[in-house]
Image (cartoon, rainbow over all chains, first blue to last red; front, side):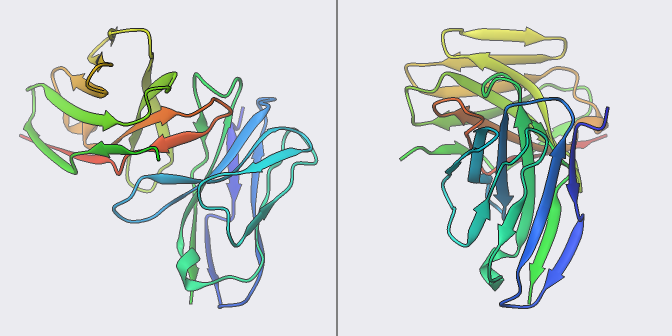
Length: 112
Length: 111
């Protein structure tokens, strides 16, 4: 049972490039979320999904797009990378949206 | 808006108890959580408490919730070097796996 798998683990982008961070879970969880973690700060919610085909914005959605075509996958797209998006990105899933969120190992993204 | 605050650093001697404190602002929070993050790793849920509870104990961990003061604490008994990590307090806003995190408390355990 792999849990929540994020790829890639590390990525360097040039300003203006686009890319997709992948997140997959094999626990059949309906709820999935993307967070970013910046130094000295807690995690901040970017986007979340309550099921296939349903997504909504979190606290810091600007510059990011998401879609949820299957229960298992919740990719995060950076449309035009900016240095302010340098961060560690975490994907999480939850069976019920309340009791426990399972986190991936994170993707460390640097935008130069 | 919602805000969760924690002290940033705590140093304890091995074998002593650690107490990590957290304050939150949203009185409608239904669940409050403590997560642990080790270097280079994701977050691991340690424990959570439902907002209608005052205390929860799980082996070496004790969570106390003071709803009046919006104060949450995590006590780790017999702290070990393996407990060295960053501990995040978080509250759930409206369910849906939407969590508001504090900045984290770095716990350092020394001999």
